[in-house]
Amino acid sequence: IDYVKKKHKNVDAYIINSEGHCSFGLYYPLQEEGFEEWASPIMKEGVVIGNRRPSVASFFTSLAFGAILIFLTRRLKCQGGKKDSLMENGDAGSSYNIDETSATLAKRVNCGPIIEKVQAAANPMLTKCQSWPWTAGYLLTTTVYFISMLITQGFAHPLDNPGFGPSAVGLSTFGINNPALIVYRMEHFRLITSSFLCSGVTTFFFVIFTAYKTGLEAAMTDNGHHHWHFPLIAGLLSFGINLCYACIGKGASCSSLALALGLNAFSATIQRRSSRLYPSPLCFTVTVFILGCTPVFPFDSVVALTAAVVIGILMGLTLFTEDPERSDEPGDDVYRNGFNANEEPTKNPANHMRWKLVQGLGALYCLQYILVLLRVPSPEKHNMYPYLTGCGLVYSDRIGDFVNAYANNANNDGRSLGEDDDGGEDYFDGQ
Image 1 (tube, rainbow, N blue to C red):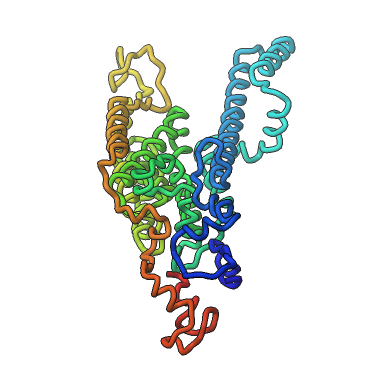
Image 2: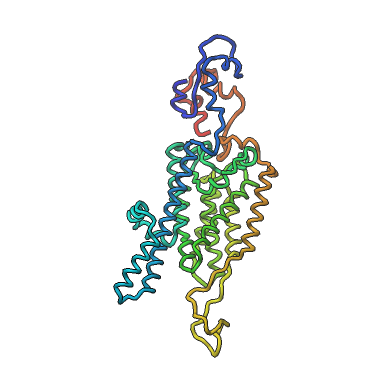
């Protein structure tokens, strides 16, 4: 027993020092003083508000780090814009106006000495992230959350998780999208947490590189999009992916790789219908999709990846419209493309969001969520047990299999647990 407890972290034992018949029930153990206190933490259900599990604390801590990075990056960018605007309005030749401009700027951007010191210390990193603050915040949140998961859950056997990450139980603890748990146990937080969850080291580096390769937010900033366009696109993608998987998916799936893939698909699509330059990693998107469908990524479902690509392409085709670019050579009364001659030509055409499409997607997502609440989807109930999701796990509900594998018997020549043979402990390694 001590060997098994040392070898497997999720095994514990309670010894009853008495005589009698063997029983698999709880009647006799409950007669023992102290057994109920020992077993109650195993059965006790956790709560979301006030939960002190490592996964809950790690998630909110990760979100806090990401939010701070976004805030400081946006603040630094606003400071630069306000300073340029004030300096343009001031008289460069007058020291009085320069002093007044500096005082006005200080009043507008001052938020306290602590924030100023933090911003000054992180200024080199914030400067690099000015054109993509939301992407940087998401990547920081995902990184902190992933590292905390590895610290608390460790690495599973490669046969259980070929992506070099935690087991199915560890991923479930940290909020993987599991339709059975969402539908039958109302764990709807998984619709959010799974978008920040990477199933393993391989998936994590794929997500980081995919987000870097796309560079969508920086391109949108350069092309005159509002700063909230990118988080809106990412949010629509994230909810669409997770709701689709909750309705028709099986097993369990992370959504971070699917989200990055969906942004790639959106970028490649909008590039082909726009007059401006966007990243177009079409070949890279196809490669990531094919790899994501292989057994190397058992916790990244083909349903989630397909939903991400389809939603990304649809949004790239329909979400934005742009005014035609204005010519800088006026004719008699109007420019050649029909704009009023009194208007100044713009460097980039305006980007207009089709709000009816956004409202339509929102209505569709609400309908999917209502179906989940009403338990219209009927995922297999055995997936409520996390260790049965992910890879094709081998398991048995016959106690004889466990007894024969962990005890002396004629089939293994009298050898017992821990010996180097085909039976014993090795029978269950990676199963």
